Image (cartoon, rainbow, N blue to C red):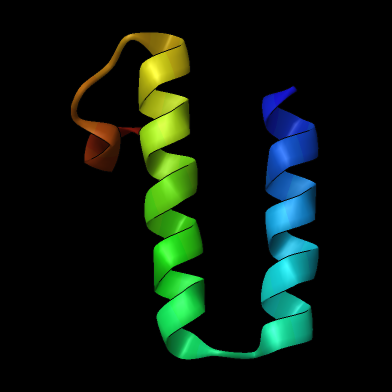
Length: 46
């Protein structure tokens, strides 16, 4: 599920080529990953 979400997000980033949307997508993936893994600090998971 998370891998599919990441792939969709990457394709979306490639289509938009918008830096602000890219940052938003990265934050969104980070939050979702943190929730799925029960880790609040996603910065340590990069």
